[in-house]
Length: 323
Ligand code: NAD
Image (cartoon, rainbow, N blue to C red):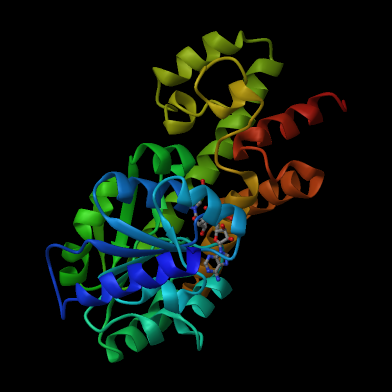
């Protein structure tokens, strides 16, 4: 019965296939229905897109089915006849396999379709995929996101895209259905450069905020008074205003809910390592980025990879107790 549903949907998709369409892209394949992708695909359905999903995890497919996403049992089946493919996947290797593998997207996506990869990866990954995609008659952009799982759930993500302007323009109705902001950052790979730059800066300011607040509090300042001073002085940042690492001061910050439900420390390490690799490749000095990478890696090696990255405050505070 499930197989028949998939087959019928495929026929419908094939009938409605267009050679190229800058408007009216309605049939979408969504690859990677995890913490981010599950919500993003659900938002596409809510905004009137027809979505067929693929994920090797049966649990992810079952959860997506409840949000109106039709399951497919392979990448080829998922992309058959669609107008657009959206993916958000864990790593460089998975993205390269999914797009360029024998059973991959580029081989099976219809000519004239548009491929949008929202995974966070090395900028060289989209640069490898792009020429193969163009050669096969499909468009391709990298469009990583900022805003986390809550942004994915509430459709408030910021998309930073790289690729041909015409492909970006075509992607905008879909990006708007899943997020609040869309930027065209330049040629292919530029979205990843913007994303990794943002996250290295976020990691550095997060670490700096944790370090300095720990020092001020250890010197005897009232934590709330210290935060008020910082938020009205020259050290103010997103980390002090929205993401204070000291529990109990900003009720909506992950630190105030035991560092759960934020941006996982392990994802911060992943992004800092990707950013460090990018910097090494062009010999751009990143002394602070390198320290931040090591510090968050230590948090992870102590077993706190699943906690929000602002947990680094607890690591520094622990050091207080040793002397
Ligand atoms: P996740 O692990 O929850 O989801 C990834 C999904 O991809 C999983 O369901 C997995 O089964 C699926 N997958 C693995 N191999 C696949 C394949 N061959 N084909 C199809 N699906 C496959 O991860 P996530 O938190 O949703 O993150 C996804 C991407 O988004 C990562 O690149 C991450 O760095 C980035 N990102 C995550 C966040 C966040 O807060 N979670 C924020 C911004 C960016």
